[in-house]
Image (cartoon, rainbow over all chains, first blue to last red; front, top):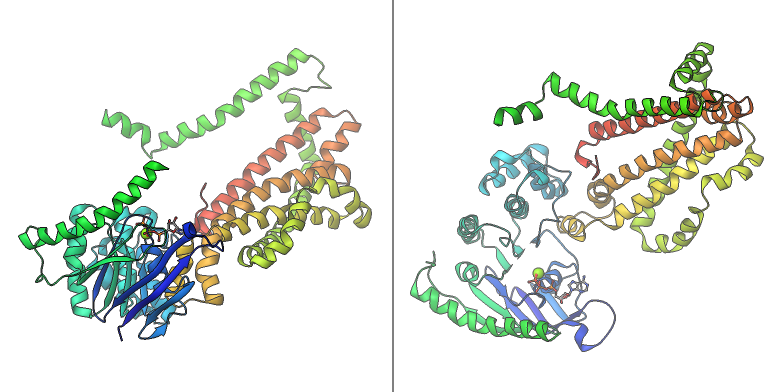
Length: 262
Length: 266
Ligand SMILES: Nc1ncnc2c1ncn2[C@@H]1O[C@H](COP(=O)(O)OP(=O)(O)OP(=O)(O)O)[C@@H](O)[C@H]1O
Ligand SMILES: [Mg+2]
């Protein structure tokens, strides 16, 4: 029995029941404990939707989403989410207070909250911005608040939706390496969504590529056993990149052609 | 060049003085135009100039009448505004949070809010007479709907990810409301309250013109009978200045009390 499992999952938004309306159809996906799983796929294929199902924000129309064999019922601290974009931050709280928020909900005392939140802010490089409000920070800094807010929970499962999408290339590289360290240490199981194949190869134990929608499912999977830390310039890296690019490129091409035809 | 920029954007005394003068300038221009127009019109009784209006104001203050009118009007607005804001906020939160409540009350609220307070004056007058109650009720009425609508929109437009994040962290029910829904909607509530303040000023004048024996609206309306246009002007200008004061006061209060919850425009 795998730790996380999508079994024959079907999903659509709204009630209309036609093929064009279906987002996911027959999605099968398994993630074993401690695995860093990266999901790739053309824009709009349903990656965020799949993550929402695992987070418990939406319920599958058919099939099931299981964690340790039990169907996901509702969101919870065991599956912490880093959302696409920065809308999930609380603009009325400072950076530090945002990171403290989950600990406050857990009922921790003020002193412990503060010290744990400060430690994580420092780890994402925001120690000097603790008292600032989100609107006073750059896009990349806001994203790092979100990362700190998720990691402060010490959750066994992390769901990350393009967490580095808005960052500059340098910061992104630094945070990728940092994330590899953090995950190696914590043993967390990660579902990580990205559009960046190189990022996927740096981070992943396993990579899944989704088909173009509607009615998307997994098209192909890649097991990555390159030794870590992975060298972005190595021959092996380039070879894997090429294989994935071919599979993903085909699907992206489908979307592009369809858009052009419409 | 940088020195010049520093001078223009500096925080010094001269800088503040410049801004004060700039802000007063439109008022000064207005007074001159008014004076000119009044002289051109040449019937001082019908169109008094700034000077005779000023003299009238001094006289009304010496009688104590202007102060009394100001106080009574402000009192009515304050009571009605506070009660109406609380009522509107409560209803708006309920409608924003519950789809069934919004669907049930929606059509009713949207019908009622187009029957403006002015339309109610006659009926309210007959039921509650010329006393305080009728005026306060009208202010409550006008405030409630404005605050209600903007609170409801505030709740409905909270980004779903804000609520989802809180649910991930275990917030449900009242804690979700207190820690996310309410603070996220607060800027809309405050913006609504500020708009409602303006409506309150319009409503009170209308109500006092029709149904009162004191207040600024009464001053404006009653002076017509005695052809005291200068007193009408005094009432109008007082109204504008009080409104400016109220608006600035609310902006200041918002900044001090709700620094974190800045409405989009303040
Ligand atoms: N709330 C919603 N209501 C209706 N349709 C939706 C909703 N959210 C997403 N969709 C549709 O579902 C499909 C999948 O969306 P999703 O956000 O899962 O894509 P994605 O793979 O995450 O894309 P991206 O890489 O651009 O983030 C899209 O076609 C989108 O139009
Ligand atoms: Mg997405």
